[in-house]
Image (tube, rainbow, N blue to C red):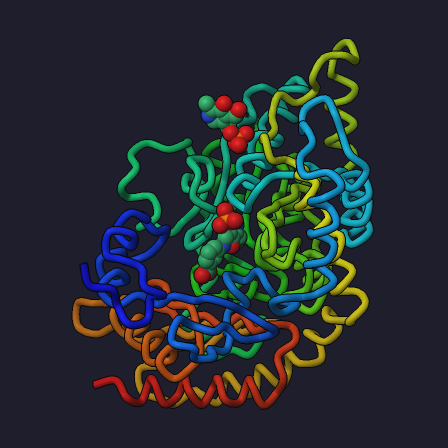
Length: 445
Ligand code: PXG
Ligand code: PLP
């Protein structure tokens, strides 16, 4: 059995045994890209090469890798309380963390339900929305509305409201869901930050309500800034219009902030940055700086109060829902330390200060061959790459692999390249990343 030179001596059998997520397994296992360590804004691969982390892990590690304050908190928690039954018992840190999270939320969002990931946060939010209307005596309000190009994780609810077709096509029937149009208008290509036009696209919600009737609709779920589809900032006024229509028709508005919460937009949340408050918010990723899996769903107090008021005798469950790993003590310790690091190092403010410079640098790629659009907000950016004949996903893959060879990790998906810089990135590092990206694109046939 031959081992690849750069795989730490892993055998083909070992490589084959792991069915990797969202990965071209055959391609990867022919020429593996194995990462062995990370520190600050850099990975080290199995060949000992340093690679700049241009997506902060998977939008997770904004505070950089190997953060001592987080490591120490995790280590301390492991020897104090490694696990605590999540159902009917509690440990101090989950309450501390819930309160801490609520302080970072817009006014009114202050009841926190813990999960193990973004996908679990989404399922939780959708279930809370349906159950809320049932508790309100409006059992007909079950229909869910998502948006084209939306990404809401990979579980059945999430792929049903999601709008990325390859993520659904293989899996048959999902949950009944309607989709609003996405907001990527041709006239908005190469817009820096939020596009001026597109708020009118929210009016499609009125059209859907006219067809289905608000008495059948539980919730609308959108990412305030669509991440996975290639970083699509909301058009000015769009989210406010969605909020207005939801309020008018008594429909819950859910913001999926798995990527946008805890700093990426230059504010604590996308809701704060874009000035629109949802009824429920889903989060994960940056909550623990990616160190331990964890998600959180934050609901308006009125929603929580409805469950309490309609909960029956108080030894009964108000919400029959939860995960073995909900509020895991080690995850809570990681999250508390991670939120401390964001605050102590003023990293959210840093994102806000760096964003205009990053915007200028990333838009300097306009005019490079095949670059059909560039979008950005905070420390996130997406490039649309003109399709190779019949192969829309080929060039982004080729670009990302060339970047990896040059020592830069960027994300590719569909016809896009995505950048999600560490909040700790230096201007010189961003400059090198943009240069490597330009070179990689120029090297394409
Ligand atoms: N909602 C949103 C808005 C997300 O971005 C999820 C839910 C699901 O989270 P989990 O933790 O179950 O993966 C996500 C995750 C990318 C990329 O490259 C994005 C995600 C995950 C992996 C890669 O854009 N988003
Ligand atoms: N499947 C089985 C057989 C289980 O016993 C459980 C949890 O007890 C689950 C799935 C759900 O696992 P989790 O709570 O980690 O989501």
